[in-house]
Length: 255
Image 1 (cartoon, helix red, strand yellow):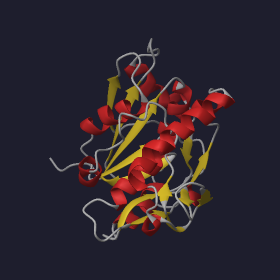
Image 2 (cartoon, helix red, strand yellow):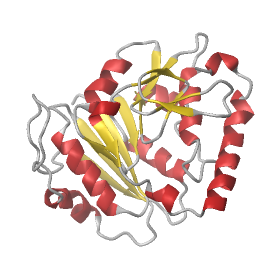
Image 3 (cartoon, one colour):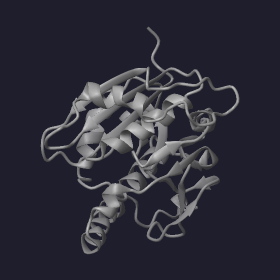
């Protein structure tokens, strides 16, 4: 059997309604592609169970909204889906590693459940990765002059792709080590993954590209909002320190 075109990895950290909304939008806008979903549940007491979560997409209004031309309506997620219950206390990086180990798609897309597709986002990402000079793609990129301060960019070349939606070839993501398990919290792990993909087997350094922002929208980022402000800053600085251990001073990676 041929591998699916895309594996979509979803981290269910504690807000199943967000995952249901995302899966409903993915069902509406996969546009005939073969897509598998891998959901990792990090909740200490998973509820609802896997079947209810995945089947519950049917009750989230999928198919009631306008769809992009050429894409068939899909009232629920009806593709391949794998549910993985992570051990209590599993961090963000370890959860991503667990999901990646189960993925079989040619391209892997890491998403946050705050994302909602409004059009053919997958088409934009796959088109970007058709270019062998591109290592990583996503709708929301980051530009930086020093790998310390970043600003969002939603089109063209960027230094890194944000973890709202980050796409890469599965073989390369595996070779780069996926998301390091040292990242127990999500913040800045996306920068680390992007830079490791761009420098995999260098030279040459490859590109990160922002594409598809017009085909998705972002809702409340629950993990950010649920974390006290002081803790956000401390955890963000810690995670950026992990990035800088390898990449600080690499001017060739700035955009």
